[in-house]
View 1 (cartoon, rainbow over the protein chains, first blue to last red):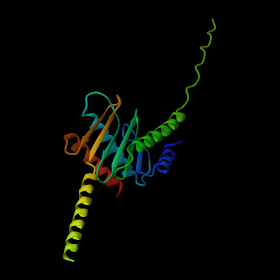
View 2: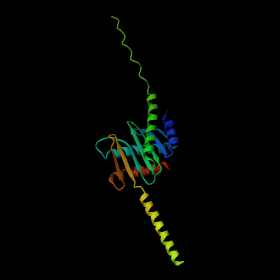
View 3: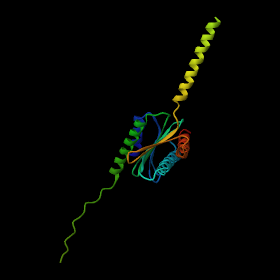
View 4: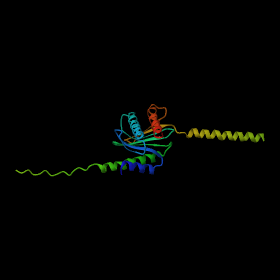
Amino acid sequence: MDAAQALADLTEISSQIEAAVLFDESGSVQGSTLADDGTAAELARAAGELLERSGGFRSTGAVTQLEAATDEGSVFVVSDGARRIAATTAPQPTVGLVFYDLKSCLRNADTDAEAEKPKRAPRRKPEAEDA
Amino acid sequence: MRKLLTVFGFVSGALAGTVLFRRTLARRRERVDVYFDDGSMVSFVEGSQEAEALLPVARSVLAATRR
């Protein structure tokens, strides 16, 4: 399953999610439900900023997920190593369910990334040198 | 008739007051819940220094995605 398919499944499963973007720790967008690439990049950049700023409030431990709840809606960010996903919802979403769906999407997209990794060539036995 | 109107006005006012009060209570405070890899969670509510650093970013994201 590629990132686009994982995101398509996400929006199909979760009616609460309005927009979502898959990105990496450098902010590079891997996939998005948004039609506009610029907006997707903006969402990824802001989500990365939220993770970075919230991590700065504590000296120990890394931020794995966050929800910023406002009167206009919520912004969710989930981080799993280098891979990240951010999503927006309407106000008062079912928080646990949204986190669960985002983690599933991240895992599905991650499985694909693992499958796409080139396999290492089997190690060849050193050839016996002729004396 | 006058007594009836007085009672009606009182009941209407009480009902309107109750609805307004409940709506005010129902309004969630803006907040940011942050979860860490050790399993702990910190909630920054609006008005705190941390929330004021994070909530504007979230608001701008929501505005941008709904444009």
